[in-house]
Length: 141
Image (tube, rainbow, N blue to C red; front, top):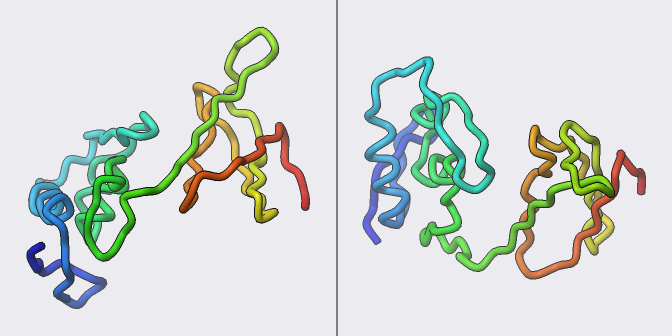
């Protein structure tokens, strides 16, 4: 691993970065402003303004926004993580876009959301394999 200076707030700090984060930062931080360009999150398939990536303060933040942070190998980030995304469908198999849902974790924690245009939930990350329950609508504890 190499050390790379990356902007942290208004100060410059030296943090240990893996090659993935270092290269990601070195590429995307030098792009000129492109107000109409779109970037793609490879995990979710969602598009978002490219300039948002360009302005991020670290290679890891950029890789996370672009959907490949799972490959990061620095700062003791575990490469072994679990993330689950669900597609909600009706009894006929049609996806349920813009539908409120609740995810319940084994700890009892609840996360609420609304499905995207294809009926997909947000990704829900856990440190190890866990069984998550998904409910239509917003539930309370």
